[in-house]
Image 1 (tube, rainbow, N blue to C red):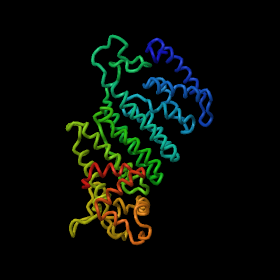
Image 2: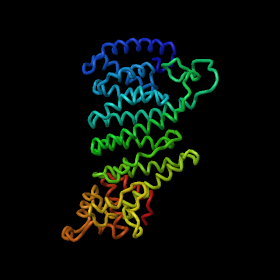
Image 3: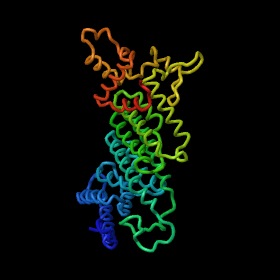
Length: 384
C-alpha cells in the first residue's frame, strides 16, 4: 500500500522490519546452503523493486555485505535482478561495493553466468537512465522544507543531504567498466555468439542514452568488440554489429555539437568506413600505392601478417558474398535463384557483378533474419 500512497510512516515501518529480516538472514547465511526463507524474501523484494522502479537503500546495504560472501550461485536470479535496481552513486562506492565482487565471479565462472551478468548490467544501465538520471536532474538546490523532495520513497535522505557527485561520470565509468569485462569475457569464451549477443544488448542501451533517455552521453564499444563483429564466424556477429552502428548514427543527432566529442565522431566514421570497405567496397586491405600498408582506419592489420595467410585478393574476402560467415547464405541464394544445371559454373562473384543482383541478395539476407546488414548498407552506402 505504501508503494501506492507514498506514505512516509508506512515506508519507515517497512524499512525497520526489512532491516531486521535481512540482518537475520545475513547472520544465518552460509554459501552453498540457502535458507528457503531468504530465497522467498529476495523474490518478494524483486517484485517490489520492479513495481516501484526505485532502489531500496536497505536492500543495497544488504547486497553490499552479501556479495562479500556470495558464491555466485545462491539465489542468482534474485540477486542479479536486485542489482539491476541500484541507485546512482559515486563510482568509487559503486565499484568497490558491487562491481568488484561481481567481476570476480564474472572472470571465474562459465558463459551462462557472464551472459546473465551482462543482462543485469543492461537492465541496470537502463534503469539508471530512465529513472535515476531524471531523479537526480530534478534535485533542487537550497534547503528542503518538506519530505516531498526525498530522492527515494524508502529513504529519509533529502536532496541537500546527497553527496555531491556527477551522475554522468558514474554512468560513463560504469559503461567503460562493463566494456572492459566484455573484452575479457569474449577472449575467455572464444568469442561465443551468445556472449556477443548479450554484450551487444548492453551496447544497444548505451547507444540509446542520448536519443531515448535524454542522457547526453554516448560511447562506442571497444575496437576488439567491433572487430569480433566484422570477423565473426556467424552471420549474427555481422548483422548485430551493423545494426548497432545504424543505431549509433540515429542517436548521435540527439547530441549537441558541444556534447559530441571530436574523437567519438572520428572513431565512428572510421569504423563505418571500415565496415563499408569490407562488406561492400572490396577495399578493406587493398593497397593504395606501391609502398603503403594495407590501409584500414580502425582495424590495424600489418601487411606482413596478411601476407603470411597466403590469401589471394584479401580485400575481397570479407564482402557480403565471400565472407566466411556468409558463404553458406550465398550458396543458398544461388541454389534458390539459379538454374540447378548451371550451379557448377557459378561463383559468389557473379552476384557482385551487377547492382540489381546485389539488391536481390540484400532482400534475401533480410528474409533470412540478417536485416542488420541490409539496414547498414542502405544507411551508409549509396547503392544505386
